[in-house]
Image (cartoon, rainbow, N blue to C red; front, side, top):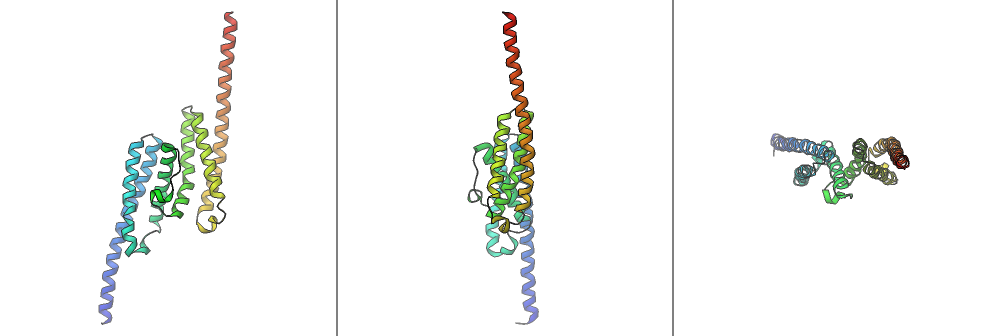
Length: 213
């Protein structure tokens, strides 16, 4: 076989590979977009809509299994990792809000490293839910979300070797720690304010009863 024939064959393979790469990128952009929108719907308590979007995103991510057999170098890198992390964040957040439990990487079909990084990002979504709950006067929900934030941070930082094995985890944990500290202060202030408000109302009722007597 001549060199020209060999190179022609390689060129055809590269063209096919590029088409696969473009298809993967398009699917991952869509999967990421669907997961982000699902998170928005969760915050809006539109759980059925969020569940449908998560399923659509999961279907797109499942297509990677077909590509990974022939093109492993195109999978689990760059945009693909970002899509898996975003999907993890959405799925775990949905599980916590709707089902009050953590879902594992096997349940949602994501690599373990993407799962760990995605879980770290859930802290930010829980903080947003805390703030929404405080605005609505729901201190109990905000306290529960704060407890979950603290749990996630504590469990991730307890993975001593993970800092070496999961690139970017240390930075995400630093962000999570700051969010937990800020949120803890905000919840504490609102809890004290709520307790004071209840105490004042009780006092007003007591004074009212004595005045009538």
